[in-house]
Image 1 (tube, protein in one colour):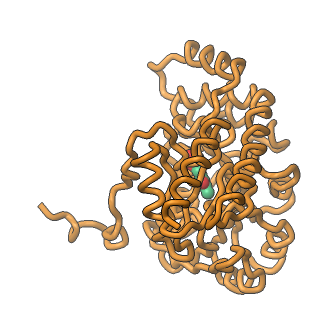
Image 2 (cartoon, protein in one colour; image 1 turned 180 degrees about the horizontal axis):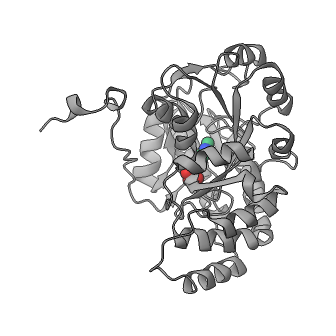
Image 3 (tube, rainbow, N blue to C red; image 1 turned 45 degrees about the vertical axis):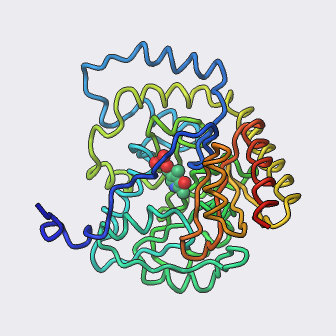
Length: 358
Ligand SMILES: *Cc1c(COP(=O)(O)O)cnc(C)c1O
């Protein structure tokens, strides 16, 4: 049976997401945190798991978790909305505030899910393309595009380019347009102190900040993300979200991890220093161009990127993400920052391959 004709037209171009993961010794393809959890965090999570009955539905309001997140950011519970990963929150934002005739502004190259979800929700997409050399955003062009927009989505640090958003640009967008502005800070824990704009949310009702436990907290498999926003935005999302999308296990484990967050600082600091070491190592390999990064990954351009990725996988059992077919990212690969051993393996393999390809 062919169901294409029966599908909602906006959904016909989509295919199941299958990253075709080949099991590899070193997986640096999905920006996961590959470090082991500190012992005290692991112990707190294990205790929370043991203490979580599965026969009852989860708290649909996730109040205990929202309280802990609110405390982390110095806001009230009413300003926090949780989701099944940041992805669910993103989808719900586009579902709630997008739709036919509503414009969503993005700054590609960026996270592909923005355009996917916007298309599924039948929004008009208005991409403001970044500079092809340094990936900077033209502020005037963005503000102009945002004038008629329902929603502007910005990413800081941006995936996959690694650069931070200018705080003044966020303020300018809020001053000069009437759009809702989402700043996706999935990776902000890896950025220098003060990079987040989350402190602006309390006085800027149209500003929303997305966070996740998938990256710095090392809990990608748990599926917990959240939005910090004005209470009326949180209410609107609360009314349309799948009520049980954050299950009892996810709520309990996320709560334990947030309470133990101080213990994650060492892991994050190590990834940041490994990122700089990786960048220094890449600078030594002829033919590699690497962009600076404030996240736990590095974007590089290498001659014959698709073939380099294939050889990394097949000859060295190292998996990285190939962006070479994405618009604006010709010959680009995204390398997640792993442990010291993983990064060394990657650097060694890359220098061997690039020497032979040259
Ligand atoms: C990883 C990521 C997210 C959220 O991921 P979840 O695992 O769904 O929480 C959001 N935005 C960007 C840019 C990301 O890279």
